[in-house]
Length: 312
Image 1: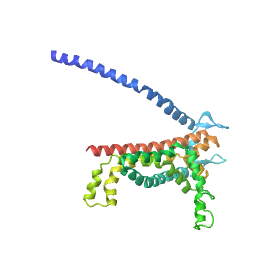
Image 2: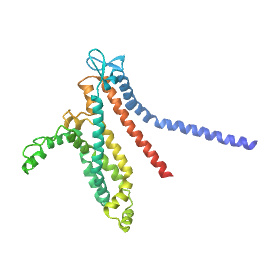
Image 3: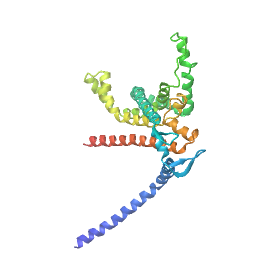
Image 4: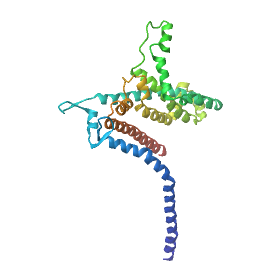
């Protein structure tokens, strides 16, 4: 009996200490929670509220509940108020997904050999090469993308070189198409793919490469059997960091696509600026947000599954 009472007395202070620790943890996290609430949750709540309101005549919203913005995503309202299916916005969403996927694939094809080459360099040279790789980030994205406009235009560098070499007799139209937008996106997000892969391969044990050579593996076989499996976490992270921002890209489609090859970012921007249809712009923003969240959820589920496999 006495032994039970002693144990109870010993546990009670422990529970009180645990409670105090929980309160302290909440107190330490409070600035972060307040920041997330103000700068993330409040704007999202405004976007959700705007999406279910009526568009104002001269912009803004009228505080009247309406699902017209969501109806406009799939249907077009005729003069007699009847609805007709309209796949124009679905086409823009699909084009955005297609270009984001193509950007991810081409960026990976470019970034992987660059990251492998960087990881194989001596430690003294790596920092210099990483420094050179990140230099474009110091320049505004608008200026970087505009430089491609000068390179790809009819009187730009590419056409002038091809004409001077006699390859072509008149300029080739390289701008204002999906290919030009793709070039701009790949150029913009290439470092987002290179750096995660490099950070993964940098920790690679070089003895594995020597062991592969001892087993008579050539460089190609070593690349696919040793380097590629080790680089998978970096590749996965790079694909997420490239695909997600490419979905909502604005500058490259606007400049290199001439506003004709529209993506979700352009469409959302124009709803808030030119069309002044804030509810529709808000609904499109939520569509983009849902797409990004689905990608991130798949990424988290995949990471958890890989962690469970590794643990087992």
